[in-house]
Length: 124
Image (cartoon, rainbow, N blue to C red):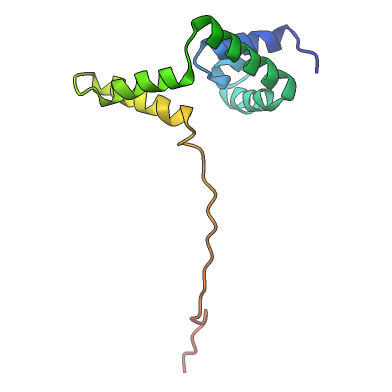
């Protein structure tokens, strides 16, 4: 897939706004509604062409900044554990760590029920 100007604007906005796909989509496609932007941003981010550009640019940014994910995680951990920091900052740091490590991702659960009681009881 060849990327057009709107795709490139979406990618640049996504990388500079804290990885918010919906907001990035609204910048690139300002005439759509929030729900459409939310759905379509997920589709764009799943697209192999866009995904590879985003990953490459993330690596470039990390190299320019010379910051590793581990260093960012350490800073966020320090903020989260700093009792002198504002509560909102501590919560934000915790949320950032949750996102970084995928703790908020849905987990698969296999649930099976073994019901031995009859569904209908005789009224005799």
